[in-house]
Length: 75
Image (cartoon, rainbow, N blue to C red; front, side, top):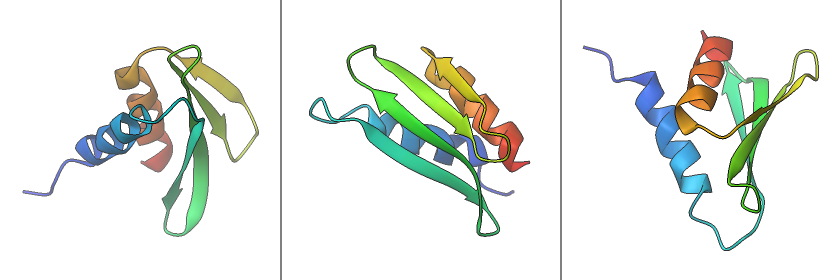
């Protein structure tokens, strides 16, 4: 059985939330091509995702929802 991709995404997102009030940014890539950038914003306790393909910006206050969006971009 292959390891869960969602578990890896959630682990990276959770690590972003354990910072000292600094904005953390992670890039998610597929085969070396950036699919999106995700920032954790401590002031609002939320995530901001930028779709690298079209520049659309999305706000999430739920880690599961942003993980699903990232997963769909990587699929």
